[in-house]
Image 1: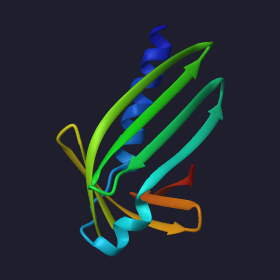
Image 2: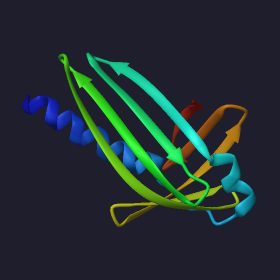
Image 3: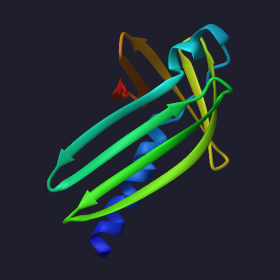
Image 4: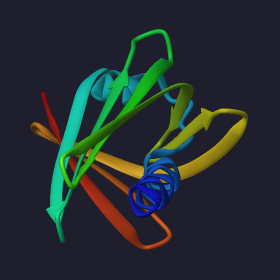
Length: 121
């Protein structure tokens, strides 16, 4: 169980840093509105990350991690803004800025050279 909690904490920290961004452009934010998700499985660890962007510039981050048959869920609320290709998210008082692009049903968020691709749900 200790190992599971450690993995969950690491995953949540990584997810928050990857999924955060800043953007103040009204035309860009409309592309984001909706529910986006990604599911990954590696070394017996399965995680689902769902990001919901609301039209009122608020959102939800839902993380579900399953390891050795145990599932832990974590929910966080955030605010966001866009400006050009910059996405800014404020989660639990922490501001994260990244770049993003939407192409069809794919949302790509890039921070520090690392990209995560979400699919519209």
